[in-house]
Amino acid sequence: MKGRRVEYDLAYGCFLVCGLAALAGSLMEAIPKDQGTTALLGFFVATPLALASVAALVCGIVLCIRLPNRWPLVILSGASILFVAALFIGDGSTAFYYAISIVYGVGVVTISAVWFLIFRKKGEFNR
Image 1 (cartoon, helix red, strand yellow):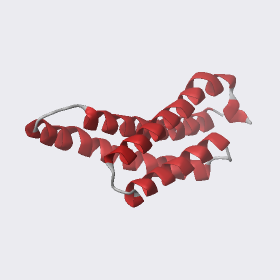
Image 2 (image 1 turned 135 degrees about the horizontal axis):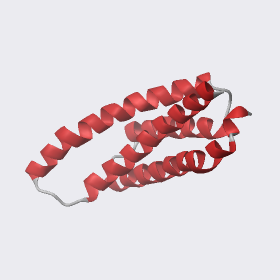
Image 3 (image 1 turned 30 degrees about the vertical axis):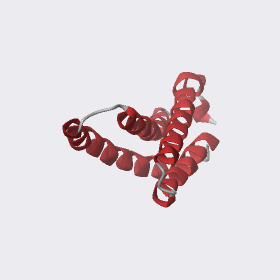
Image 4 (image 1 turned 60 degrees about the vertical axis):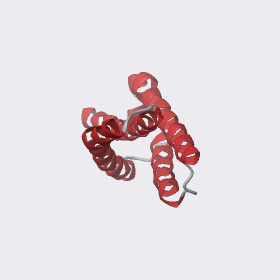
């Protein structure tokens, strides 16, 4: 039972990392900065954050497939796949990218927070 709970925690935690990375990316772009600061933020913050987010996304989707069907995990996986697809297929406007990053980030953080703050304590992983 404890092992299953850890797997659910890891799955929701992986999606939480992705959502926070999307929000952090939107925030970094919104802050006015000079060219040197942009290069430093990109190299020391954005690149490691993007790599960690990709690894967390893959881990979260694999755990979603592996664990018994839970609708929040399925929603998080679907939203993540649609978010990545929208980033690649988007129309190129910065407003579009900011909007989908903020909507995705807030949605994922909210669903993950509900898991950690409410459902996890009720023992929802046992059903």
